[in-house]
Image 1 (cartoon, rainbow, N blue to C red):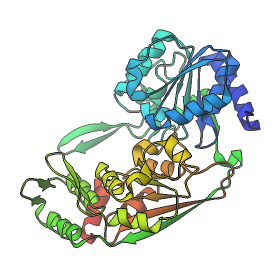
Image 2 (cartoon, rainbow, N blue to C red):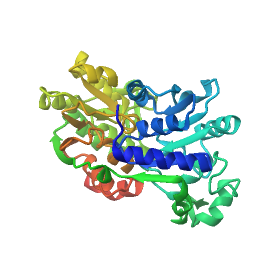
Image 3 (cartoon, rainbow, N blue to C red):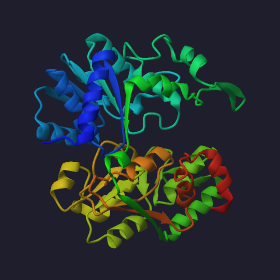
Image 4 (cartoon, rainbow, N blue to C red):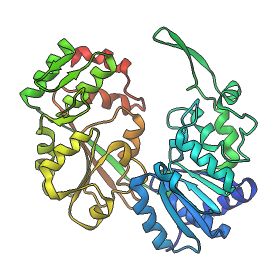
Length: 408
């Protein structure tokens, strides 16, 4: 296996940064080869052991890259949720999709686990993400705070860090005032420059064109009647189950579910009430090997009911058979390649702009010329409204929904 020229250059730069500071942040866009670049850097360092922490869906593809590369070090690959199970000594730790550790003002559980491991083992640390601060520059603090030589080490807590690096705004949630820390300053990224190596798809020579098409599906009368009743009464009572939308957020979520043919009851049980979208996808893409993204768990149940054994959730099986694959948007949007797909099909759309931009790029490779992406929206549904927000790099929020509700 040979590295591309730009990967060799990044490996050399990353090696120098690691030797000097003990950690490096590879801010490389999706499909530019972050995984192999990290492994190449570790190999140049001469480490004997590596811990590669990633998302569960990405484990198999990382193992495949390791098998192809055949470096001199031994590797342990694990997902963030299982990090507490890891035993052993590691000379290098790779934190894939490291923006997932960026919660603030308090660190997340996974971030605390990572910090504890780094402080005990003192390894070289390679952080990787194509979107280091997808929602706020403030997300950088907890990603790097476990690294001894990080530029914010003088600030022992996020709150002390925020006094210097964040424009803190006082906002009311209900009647209670709360500090809003989302307005992180540009100086955060400025401080990170010595530790970050950035690389874009354009710099790597990617020329893929993403062509998006919205296809509309008329849902069943049951779906539209339930939407109408819920909007009017904020509750639907059945013989054994209840659909309750007694807050704005719950109404937004329930309508989002209903317009795609599913619903989650107050009991916590989900149910498919309308197979129109699943049947449309099966019919429209009958002769194609497709990557299907869904949002709610019951949507997978609808797809599986229609596709049967022709549908898988495992990347290895998708790559080696003619089966199509179904992935939940949030778990499938990062760290995997769907290059074997003829196209991507979205059963539903997520409220997150990050989900939109990351997941639609799963087919891209350096040799890709065109990506076909299809959005399956219900006639008269909420999906169009969400699509308009996320394509403008804005999350779809309750504020948007309240404006849109009258037109639904």
